[in-house]
Image (cartoon, rainbow, N blue to C red):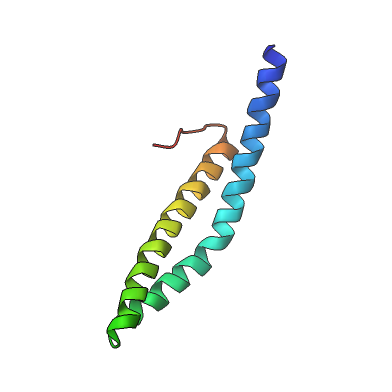
Length: 84
């Protein structure tokens, strides 16, 4: 039974590391897209509504990517934190 649990923990650690690496790779593009939408907030009111919605979505994606990247770093060092 303990061997099964150790295998599951090792697999979960590998998944966290891979997810963290993928999130770290996507983070620069997400930040670039977020700053692009933030820069274009003035002007057409219809586009402004879209840009505000898009900014909220991208900000949430950036926060998730940062969290996953941090979890990957923690998994590499051997510790895991549960998601709040």
